[in-house]
Length: 220
Image (cartoon, rainbow, N blue to C red; front, side):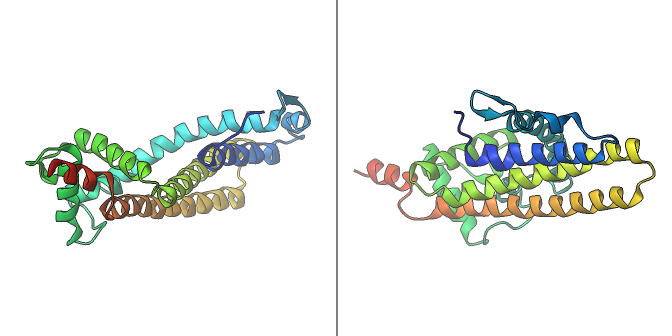
């Protein structure tokens, strides 16, 4: 039987299930999806499979929403230490982060301001790999999972608005309710994005990281 991990469940299946539930509730004469609930393929309910597939489509909408949202904020939170667009960690921690990244990359001349957006994207992934290797990524992963969940919920609620408008026009009450729910989900997405970036760098700055060991070996 297929086992889904935490991110797949909260970031893909749940938003997909929410969207399909909205479709089922909006359908005038009962949704054909209701007849699929008891069917299974390979031990998995067909409803779960449909939610998983739909969740990926919903997250594609979420990707577009994410791109537009963070562009308005001048980059994602993990990019803020490089650009200084918004405070993410304490100003006293910025030089520490810079020094730790120098060690991680074995580049003594590295500075945050010298890194391009594309280079920093890859560096942040390497920072996460170092944190994960040290077994310190649990809270980071939870924030990432909840970020994916809220992004998916926002996309689900907003994608349901035109569907509801077509089936139950004018249906203003439901449309306004979905818009409000989508706005709340976007707010939560923002908060979890900030929490993710902050937690990632704080864990990276903790003593005992791979970068510290690399520095100690270099001094032997």
